[in-house]
Length: 453
Image 1 (tube, rainbow, N blue to C red):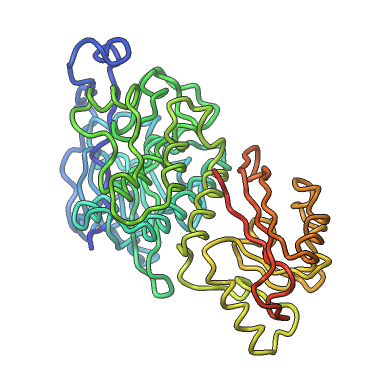
Image 2 (cartoon, rainbow, N blue to C red):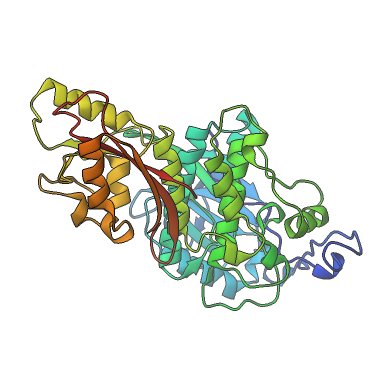
């Protein structure tokens, strides 16, 4: 497995004049390079045994990218290994940008984000940034070597990246460069796969109106960014949609020369992933990708929370869930000691949809984790009744229909809209029916929820 490395695919700027109007005009490559400035170039190349910042001794080089080198160093007092980033000379001259990145990244504290622990300016070797040392494989490398991910692996990676990005946005920051190069897959003793988000070199405050330059990677840039709109939550969500597509299909939707890619982002629709792979992929994955990559930012998920909500619903309905079940995943309140009750709980927990069994008065006997998530609950208590939950607010006829199903045995289907976090919402279908055989383990009425997008 390869160590983390600096990205070499960041565009310093994009020349929109090369694109012409809506994809017409010159075919000149829009990538423009910042001229190298040797005035701040280090006097000599840093190598093993050299000390940086009076406290970090270089053990060796980890990787190299377009913006600099990543070195393995050891703190002389802590005797602990870290990764240290030395930008190339032409990037080292952008001190203001470098320090902004370092301060912003070091202020973020999340399990799925690579921690920045120190930064400074060495008189010999220039600017440096120190990060936690991670041993793993870049997601880009995995895709190159192994091809596309299975829907289960893709969803697992996306859940972790989206959680990290939701936290980033909650701190008033836009990442600006979500792509496989900036995602590291590591292995830990207690988890098969753990994902880390790297490289905040293009991160900006959400209030930053930008400088009129378009920085990023062509395959993941949102249409409005190409038109010089500043980075935003919406443009990060667009990149999430492109990433999800790439994990499912094995390559981003638009490839080729930078000019061609940018035109496609502006004008071309993205084909549904399910049309391109033979994994019996549910159309809900197509809907998530389509919504996240809508040309108009207003048509995308309003927040990463809304993206996560739909992604979790997709996972729950197709058995794509975490590898380890927590004690709260499926809870049986009544008759918990009976074999029948335990069997009922296990069946419900394996159901691919949010599912619950309730008594005639609406008391929940069994609910899988997906159902509790819909209700905004983490655990199930003995006295929890559906009429006491937020479901009643969006489905006023719940009590009446529940009694009808329990007494007549007929199946009732209804649709309604529920909040999906912050200002987002999702349409849901609810199906209430009686079990084929009456059982104390499964109660009187079964309720299944189906997100409709």
